[in-house]
Amino acid sequence: MPNAGYPEAREAIAKKVSKEHQFRVFAENVVMTVGAAGGLNVAIKTVADRGDEIIVIRPYFAEYLFYCDNHDVTMVPVDCAPDFSLDVSLIKRSLTKKTAAVIINSPNNPTGRVYGRKELFDVAELLAAHGAEYGRIPYVIADEPYRDIVYDHARVPPIMDICPESIVVSSFSKTLSVPGERIGYVAVNPKAADAARLVEGMIMCNRTLGYVNAPALMQRAIAEMGESTVDVSAYERRRNALSKILDAVGIEYAKPEGAFYFFCKAPGGDDVAFAMHLKDRGVLAVPGEGFGYPGWFRLSYCVSEATIEASAPMFKKAMSEWSAS
Ligand SMILES: Cc1ncc(COP(=O)(O)O)c(C=O)c1O
Image (cartoon, rainbow, N blue to C red):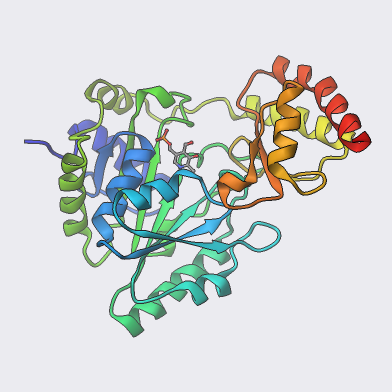
């Protein structure tokens, strides 16, 4: 019979999440999953019925659309503010009686934004007020696989402490740089009104979605990992190196506070054409269109410093030929 996972792994995650969120979470609140991707699918299937709605913040991680589709749930994109922070008034306008959850991804892929405590408090308050009116408080699903990768003393606020009806989804794909091992988890806020039922639902969904359980060997490994993380200073050096290259050629971007992406303005406004132009000159970029945000493109600096340095002449060539064309 499948269960929520190896007890020592769940205990280790409960300890980790309790520390990160300054809030006591117990092993029985944790379900081990096949990465954050598996965790998001399990969380969505558990909290939403067919025809329900899930709000995501645009630009959004492209896969959310497919995850919602998997469960016949409508993804409702809500624009962020111009500085990529949360626009709570826009979230308010998009809530309906069918809203099952709001997915909050911080640090954000693709913008690198880390949302502040006040923004999250405002969202929690808004959802509680909505629940009081409609009899159903939408959950915050906090998608946090980049939580440990933050710069310049940024801190990801503790959503568990801020919002009782919250579910944290995360993984070790980025924190330990092991995306292929497919080890992640869902932690349900013990204060959520239906905490025990949510965990039961997630165990069932993990099984019926065909994951059954998270990879057993990796569950044993992460139980022994303590507080290990990747060396964030290596990402910080890469971020700084790439920002110098972008500054030198006049590409505008939002300086990442976390994760390992630059979200940049496409010169001329056509993100697909500009990404193709970069590709032909040796630089791989993802058009903003895929994140629901045309006119921008994403660069990843999850590559070696040598690769970043080697891209400088490519950007230079690409920009001079783009301006000339
Ligand atoms: C925002 C976001 N959520 C979830 C995931 C899925 O991560 P995992 O590899 O743990 O499934 C990713 C992976 O890139 C991501 O960027």
